[in-house]
Length: 142
Picture 1 (cartoon, one colour):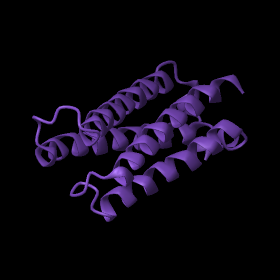
Picture 2: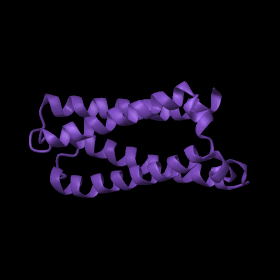
Picture 3: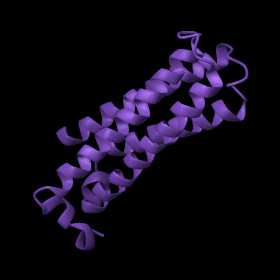
Picture 4: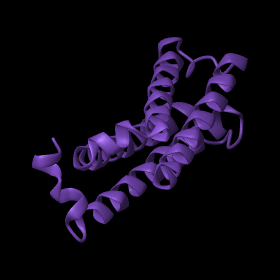
């Protein structure tokens, strides 16, 4: 894989451009999740939850798509180095847990019952995504 995509890390602007796309994706994902999660916690009660979800969640998914695409390309440029990084491996495990948490939130119909479990799931979500971002930054220092 390094042979075909090695140019990503050696090209003067390819990797930095991918990092910018990655950061824009993070902003879209986490920004919209925080807005939605604050509403689950009762802030902004004047905003109906379903219309807010119809706006925020597709934008969050678009952010995740940007993160996934740019992340896969960055990974393709240096797979051996990243797989050897504990921070990268932990980051991927945390992304998986965040996805499972989101799937659980929607599978249990948490939009229809803003109970303690739904609120706990939003706290777990935010914590997982913050941990993902910390691990992502930590990769550069290993």
